[in-house]
Image 1 (cartoon, rainbow, N blue to C red):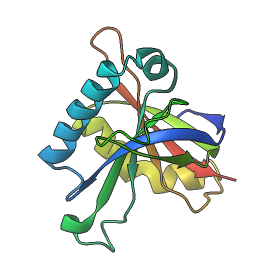
Image 2 (image 1 turned 30 degrees about the vertical axis):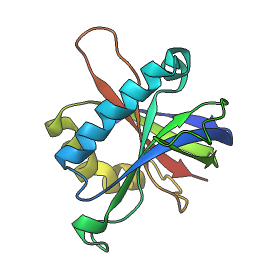
Image 3 (image 1 turned 45 degrees about the vertical axis):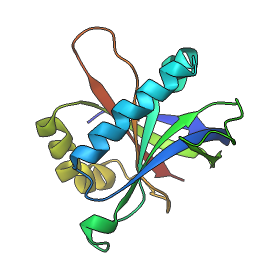
Length: 152
């Protein structure tokens, strides 16, 4: 699978968190709520530029499904520290190997099943950080997501 290298700077961000199984309906609903929040705050230019990042915080092999944390993160320089709908913070950035995958259950599952072999075949030196998912608004019917693997 082809990938590109991307350097992400340290950036100010807002996020929403869901606690529960990663494939849950609550996660889907959180994405809908987050997109609505972005639209209400007129952040569509930032959405087109950066997209929405999904950040799984826990390894489901080590953390029970009901305690797995999943954040939706959005890059913005605007101050939303007083907004009750989102939390604020900083994304540390870094170097990432970016893989683009069709956003279907089959293709995403295939990506995850092939990931250890892709890391080995491409001799990627993975650093200790979450693998990120990035969703950008697409024009047309071909939906894709990107997986960003933190590398040295």
